[in-house]
Image 1 (cartoon, one colour):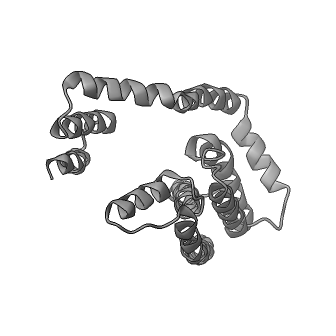
Image 2 (cartoon, one colour):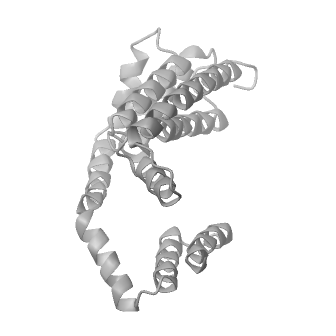
Length: 223
């Protein structure tokens, strides 16, 4: 049970507002030492994990590229593009992105989109332009603009969260399979993936309704 102290450290650290990276590092060290590993063995585990997952650092290369594209007018181009499609509304745009995000995540393509890659530079500006195209007052108030950006980010989160569990080789599925196997319950990853499909469908339907209601709310007097 001492191994679970790492979970308590994560909860307490996040609740106190400490640096997430520092909290996770301390939790990992504490968990390793509680499991009977020496400090050198814990450090070796960190090194092995980094060496086997070096592709994670590729995300650091994406950020400068996105910055250069934004400086060159990527957001403005996205706004102009969506402004040329009169039938594309805020709700339709985000529901379409939700469907795209869920389907790609279900195929294991979890890094094909995200907040840094697509939401900030492309989807959010498009959503703002679509909302402005629907309203009669023209430019959105700052509060409404921030709400549109937040809803675009939330749409990405929901699509990824409920879509990735359909992919049977994702970490969460393998974790559950391993945990159940330790308890004497043998189950195939495909079985868990199949049962994740109804949840993903319901999540899609619920968030689609939320997006439609959100769009209607922006058209009100306070928009």
